[in-house]
Length: 145
Image 1: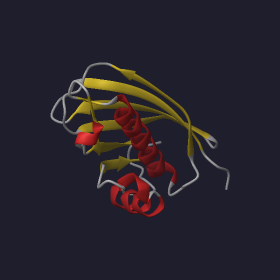
Image 2: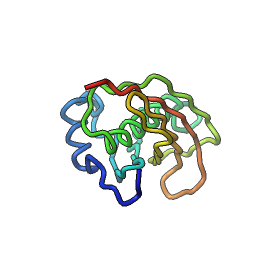
Image 3: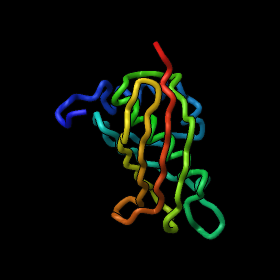
Image 4: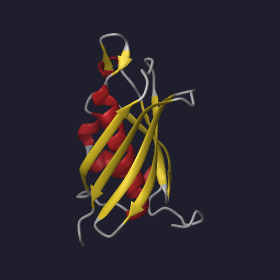
């Protein structure tokens, strides 16, 4: 993908699509904010709530895993358009350091986009910091038209 290519969906279009097709993601209130979408990835913020905390005052692993998956899906949609049936086939995450309570930002980069599979890299950091708190690798299966 060339850096000057336009994404198939803007951040606003992806947000409308997710709100429409996956309303359960915001069951307890708005959880994710799409910051940007490009042809090569996306930036998504977890608007952390008390429910995302675990004992010891840190963001829970499951919350970071969900953010990893959402960021990868948003990044994929920017490149392939609104495909509700694209599904996660693999997600691996490495927890690098303990994030403090607060919002997290996941930056997704598409490593490979094929006709049937996409491989994406996601790096998570605390808002206002450049230090990586988690890194994930996600593979998505893309349905045939």
